Length: 388
Ligand code: TRP
Image 1 (tube, rainbow, N blue to C red):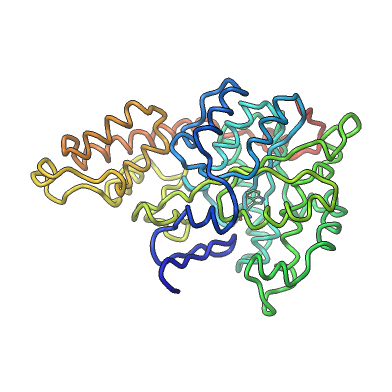
Image 2: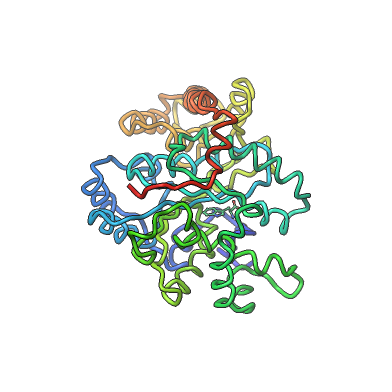
């Protein structure tokens, strides 16, 4: 790789240094979420932007302003996100889009559809379908703990729901050449044929007619329904492709809100990953384990306390500060922590203790909202959901 080269696709995220998000926005042709857009959000919804927006965790978008205008006119939309079940337990990085989607649902009071791509993980990983189904079930329980309104949420596994989307899947497949697909996702002649056709499955839920038995499409024309997708930036290639073919299929282009990757505990330029469990915090980690992991996380402070008092620390590379930025919903306190840590008045131990407290309390709320078996079943039932 030459200098600054980075690869970001749904199947590979690598960079010779930290991910350069400005470059991604340029390369992908998306737009930065700026203060003007956030002010418009507040004006239209009456809500203060979520900390993930205020802190730039969700940092990029496609057409979010258009969606806000659409909503202001009283027109219908739904939210679509998803999860590939490749690990038993979710980690904090997996929670970010889910917590954010549940918050968006509260703000806009709209239906949410959540795709579980069990087919994707089978095609791309060395896993058996039976293992994947088990993980999917656990993942669905964890996702519901993020605070979704079950009456307005539909969770579906691709292997079970495919028949309802299949006509749209066909319409999509017919409009994407193998060359275009390979170029977009980095597939080649050695990819299996399931992999090459999989993108159509992740694209189909962008179109309201994939939920013909769920949304009332007798009153509203499908092409007047918009779709909002909160996702990590690596999923953008699917939706860039969707936006190319949507007009030809007479649908609106989906609207995107993109998040950065949550850094691992090893440093702010990295990505939290289930395959590096020592540097990831899982929802099932005990309070003691979380404390241990955070205590060992990368610090932006000086090694010796006396040096730290004298020279101060660098909050921008400090993992604990980063966790506070994401999960402490208090801008005033955050400013104070930044100031104190940078000037050496707050020690590394103190900032780690604060991060630990914040994460522990979030996980406590999370664990207290575990869904019942009935709720897990209910959320997967095909049933009518109103746009409003
Ligand atoms: N491919 C995603 C993953 O591996 C799962 C997914 C499916 C998704 N549909 C989505 C993510 C829509 C975001 C938005 O996790």
